Amino acid sequence: MFDAASSPGQNRSPLPPAQPPADGVPAPRTPTSAQNQRGRQRGRQQAADRPASGRQRDAFFDNAKYLAIVLVAMGHAWEPLKGDSRILEGAYTVVYSFHMPAFIIISGFFSRSFDMRPDRLKRLITGVAVPYVLFETAYPLFKNAVTGSHEEISLLDPWYLTWFLAALFIWRLTTPVWKLVRWPLPLALGIAMLATVTPNIGDDLDLQRVLQFLPYFVLGLCMKPEHFHLARRRSVRIASVPVFAAALAVGWWAVPRMNTAWFYHRDSAQELGAPWWCGPVMTLAMTGCSLLLTACFFAWVPRRRMWFTALGAGTLYGYLLHGFLVKLGDYRGWFEHPWLHRPLGEILVTVLAAAAVTVLCTGPVRRVFRFAMEPRMEWAFRQDAAELARERHRQREKAAV
Image 1: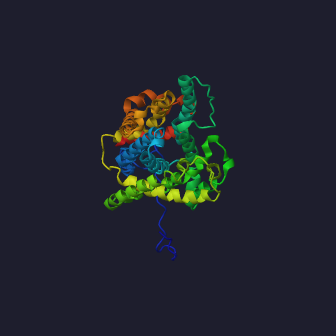
Image 2: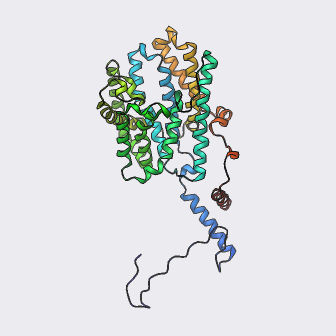
Image 3: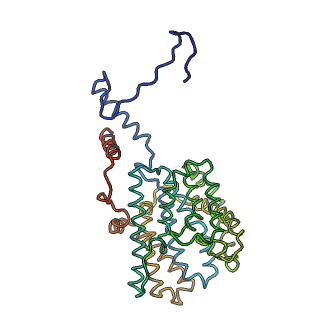
């Protein structure tokens, strides 16, 4: 490791290791057959070292994404009904305290490798920016068609669910910054606290939500697989039961005493009619509660493959498409039926919401709407020479293995 300081000819420092030849270039004085053998061995070793997620999706994360998106759909279906049921509103409060933080943490975890490489920027554009534009246009047009209104299209004012796409686009673009700074999580938390005392941020791109939810994304960037393993221990699963029970009790107690708009993270303290100092205090308190309940949620996510595991790959489809069903029911007055405001009606709405978002995550629905969610758009991008070389290298590795 270190160069020896001795007389010439004695204990010479070792020569630097030979650099491997470039791909496709034979090494000098190396038979072609030996080089091909080493190439095959190197390909097998790289395939073995490659993370499992590159070859097979992790069932835990797919299960977590599916269960989180089911909770999102249930919460949206509860919103028109919760005013008549204190129990339902308490459950709504508990679900809203952790379902989006859990989803955002997972999004941050899978954004750890993001950089400004052309192929990753291309996926960011086709998988996030293009769906944002399409659905930001589709939602107001849908309302105009159903209600006869004249809603305007605005790409700067996210409509209903599209705020998450705008936020994810911004968060991913800033990923290299969070990987560079020394204390990313305290910095992100400080930005979220400052956002709650800044009412003049405005509604453009829903920046309040972008900034207030930012700590969860940065936390996901900082996490490693072993951190999720800690939450999946048996002791945590057992402890999560009384924690959730206590959360439901607190949610029921807080219904007449707390403004649930705090859980949306879209307004400053002043806009919610609270003193400015309540913003930072509520940010810290709600972040702590959200992370505790998120850990309890992860503790009960199955680790093995389940019947719904494959649906975890289609959660963005379920997220964006179920909004049309919820809004259709709202526009048509379906939620105003008195029977739906009774316990059996609330249970029926919950089951229907879970079933609908499940169907929207399935393969046939994904194939139909892939043009909007995952467009290839090869025509829109220049061919990157480095990416073409990497693709050829990947093809050679597969052939060697």
